[in-house]
Amino acid sequence: MALYVMANFENRNKENVPGLYFVDRQCIDCDLCRQTAPTIFKRATQSMDSYSFVAKQPVTSHEISLCDRAASECPVEAIGKKNCLQFSTAGGGELIAG
Ligand code: SF4
Image (tube, rainbow, N blue to C red):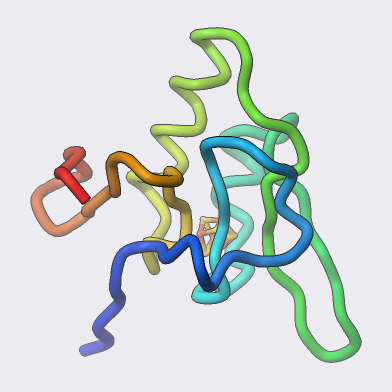
């Protein structure tokens, strides 16, 4: 059984635009977040590696809702929020203090 830790801002992918949400280097490029919030999450490719990053920070409540959903669904907990709350899928995707 694999063990994943919550997204770490210090390990974020360099392509993330500044702002609250980020994707870190745990991303396994499963595509789920890009399907859930295609205007927010995009795919980067670096030689042999590919992963998601936040290409646009959410503005509307709908976009924020999609980001939160993507974060709670990410299978490796690679999506995080800077300096506030972190997501955990351990208990069904609830927010916990980070
Ligand atoms: S859902 Fe998670 S693992 Fe999948 S592409 Fe998005 S950040 Fe990467």
